[in-house]
Image (tube, rainbow, N blue to C red; front, side):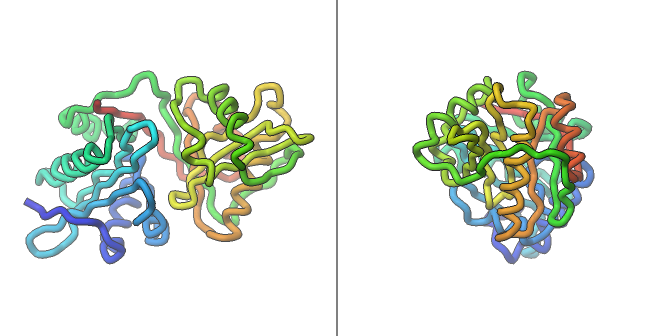
Amino acid sequence: MATIRSLTRDDLPVIVPLADDAARRALIGRPMWETEADAAAELGTAKRTFLAAVDETGTVVGMAGYRLRSTGEAELYGPLVAVEGLGTGAWLESRVTSLAAQEGATSFSMLIGVGNKEGQAWAEWRGYSHDTEAPILLHTWLYPGEMRDVASPGEGLVRRAGTADLERIDWLVQENFEHHRTQPATWLENAWVLAVAGQVVGCLRLDPAAAWVDYLCVDPAWRRQGLGTRLLTEVVRRFWDEAPRKVGLAVPLDDTAPVALFRRLGFRREVPVARWVKR
């Protein structure tokens, strides 16, 4: 059986090609590392733990990890293995869920490609079930230098969020994500808002470690004015000024208008995934 230890930067030349191949074949939703810089940005960040599986020759043969959310859910990365059928994936999944539980996790989730039937069967064997209440998500990415101009982006001031914005951000998130539990106070440092005439009418979070956008939302009374586009494009440009890496986000696959908008903006490399959970 493989030995399990912490994943290090020295392991990335082996792990990143595994992750990139899984993404290209739309097998899983996390990790989505194309380069060692993508992976290195997430290693060692708060609330994330990554493990490597090493065989008897010292060769790295797999990885898994998790991110612990404020809701008590551990979002799993992988597991990814170089050779299937040896039980390495199950061993990795068992170790990361055990570690997450010790940190207080009460549930576990993974994102599996909608066409990955073998992965879905494996998840069922490991005690996961398809979360049918969650939408099928399309993961997609925008690469530096590939953002396209969109006619008539909205007006307003884009700025980092502050504590005075918390109540408004919480209202916006609850209004736009009815069934999504979150605590904006826990991610305020990565939050941005768009204000018109001093009123916050939109917000989003951009996690710099994962280069991932979520909670992109606009006050219903201010929609269809290009404000969400203005907020997203401005924040991504500012991120690229400091870290020229691809930026990703997820959108419900059946939400055709946002999907079309993101494609017009230049988002590509799409991976449709479903959420699987174990409690």
